[in-house]
Length: 68
Image (cartoon, rainbow, N blue to C red; front, side, top):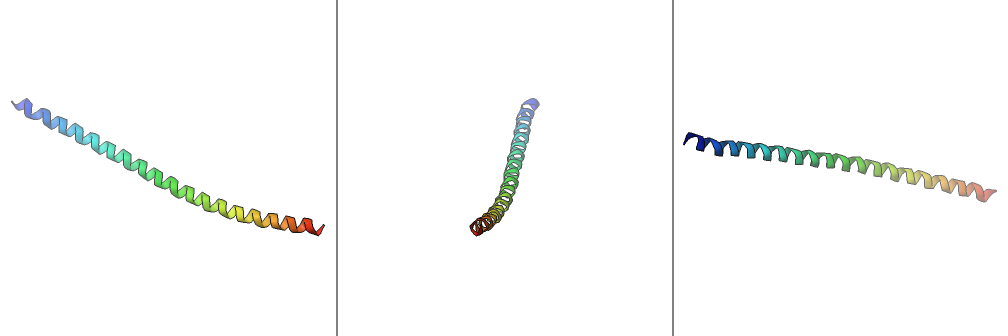
């Protein structure tokens, strides 16, 4: 009868370790996605600034061509 009490304990420990690992893995994925989102937001802001700069450059070129 001693072995019968040990089997459920081992099963519980294995399941606990499995759920702990799975939870950590999912949290790492969430953290990675949050980092990627921040990176994309920064890139979006950078590209928006680049578009504004290019639009100003195009206006300058158009003005220069009109003067010719």
